[in-house]
Amino acid sequence: MKGLWILLGAGVLVAGCSTIPGMRDRSELVTEPEVCTPKRFEVYFRDSEAGLTEAARQAIGLTATQLQGCNIRAVQVIGLADARGGPTANLDLSERRALAVADALMAAGWPSPVFNVVVAGESGSVTAEGASEPMRRRTEVVVDAAPR
Image (cartoon, rainbow, N blue to C red; front, side):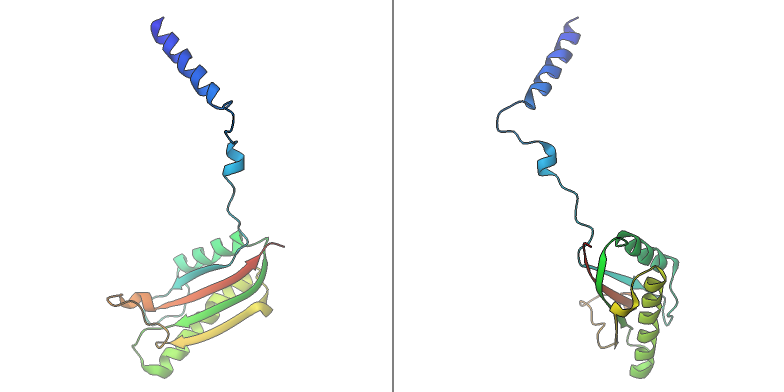
């Protein structure tokens, strides 16, 4: 019986905490994060390829779904490449990567007039010292989204 009394006593103490003057309700303190805000994400590619990988399709799909009910005001897609292949080849590869991402986002329902496709080639892909080459094989997507 003694164990039961302690359990009941603890229950009374916990229940009593919610009635302490000055304590705020949890719903006043914890809010859901706003979904329709500017976002930035990256899509990575295989070496010398512009085709979307399964991981890239998932990243695009998740972001497209997350922002489905938002007002998408602008989307900047920046294609990047590593230093291999020379400047002309890298610009071409960067453009194909950026267009692949933009096409996938438009296929997911994003409005096409808001897209700005930028190609940086290897010049825009400078990363922190010691970064591996795959970090340079990407497309950066910057989305200006707001609530409707």
